[in-house]
Image 1: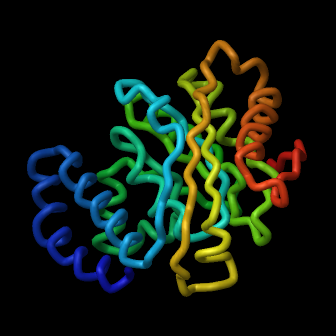
Image 2 (image 1 turned 135 degrees about the horizontal axis):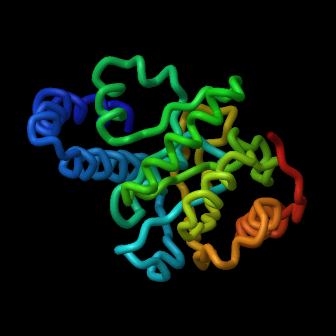
Length: 236
């Protein structure tokens, strides 16, 4: 997979990024990246089963909130989403010459997990991206889970959802804890389920804490029984 991505990066760097810069439109570059991500995952032998994607209106803007257990999660889930999406990415990765330029052009949001002020700035930046009609995908735990169970959610994504008033779509990823757990770099072939739950409409938000608890319960409900926790804790 990594070899495939490295080879695919050559035409991206030589043609698609300069072309996107010249025409002022990143849609073609985005589609190429999504094609590369999806096909890279297929090369590993990971088999993805998608549930509930037909519930989404491709003409609407959403904030997708997902659990997170593996580094392979974004490469599996993001290419499935209708229309272009932005994600929160570690600020250090924006320093990579070619990749950093591409991520900035694609409205990716830099985030510094250890800096509260930077976190607030990231939420404001993400809100501007959503208001431009770009979906936002957030792994709401902030870190990968070691055991496949949900860990405390970050509050920032729920400030974003409340401020933008766009539907929230909870996503449950099942199986990446097996194919590529947090402690392992290698990928083992196997099945992965990506479950898209019913969108939560703005009128149903209530308070931020109520929204956070509802999203947590829904994501938790899609996990296998041995991984369900039904906890309702959050971190700043």
